[in-house]
Length: 120
Length: 227
Image (cartoon, rainbow over all chains, first blue to last red; front, side, top):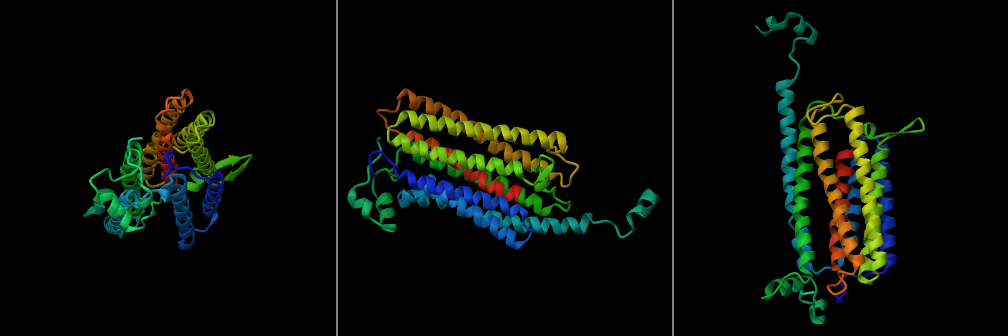
């Protein structure tokens, strides 16, 4: 690498800048779609594209040596395990809550009228 | 700078060969200025913090049985009588992306030793950052006063909404605010010529921090506002 560090043509920065604007607009656009898998797919796609270009070009990761790239981008992979575990845990907690906190079989209005008597 | 330059032969190495070269020798592993290596490691630790926040948010949102308030409605703006969903957040996103671009240019002009342009672009980046924090202050005011959202509950639905929102966007806003101060200080020193001898890696290091703040926003935007 040159003594003066990361120097790249300005044209490249302007091109990536433009791309990031397009991805941002597309990302905002997904808010007008119906909720569902298709929308989730687009949200994640534009998110990853944006994040990737920022790290690779604006943060110059693309031009660093592999020793640094792997040391920085490797560890966050373990976070996927945490996310996976917490997603499973979240589902489980929701099911338990639905189980325990759901309305009693007696209609709500009926239970309220009788107050504590209904507890027998 | 004091870091060990990469020789021509080393620069030609590919893949694992270069990793073995860098890790297997009795000298500094990362061939970048120490400040840059340390900034990357700091950003790595920050990645873990933000991921923990976002994962915690995911967990409470998935586990609550109460409906989650609709972000496109809560964060919408009324433009001349038309309700545009999520508009404020869209504007904030474009503001940050713009500031990322000006920062990238500042790094470039720094390495060209064009002090005036580098400092001006850094101040401009800081100004976009300050604008972002300003819009965030407006957003918080709207949520607190107009929608009645509190960290412990709100009239719209799941009470975890406020806790997650204030925690995550607050921590991000704190990063942006700190970045504005950091960039302004470095820009002033660039302008004064403090780095003429040392070189302008410092602009790139400050830039790494700033791009990271933008990067975090990409994930917050996707997971908090678009979910």
